Length: 94
Image (cartoon, rainbow, N blue to C red; front, side):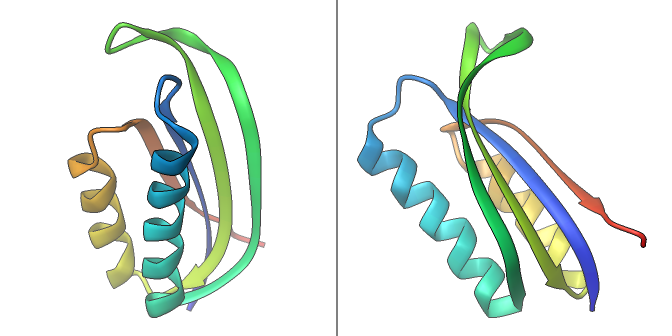
């Protein structure tokens, strides 16, 4: 297993219930495929540039351990979730 960090930006006009549902979906997937070591709700922030007509978004950060095969499926999950504007998964090398 390798250490990874993912951050995803959700639309700023979603409800708290929608936000919690997205976060729990991602976390449940990561619990199935690995282990979450840290998570942090970074709150609502201004985007560096406009994305899909949005200028602000809700940021969420998760550090986790997983096998490389799990990353492709996680990225696919991000792409098909309409409420997620942007996401990134980075392998941490220490």
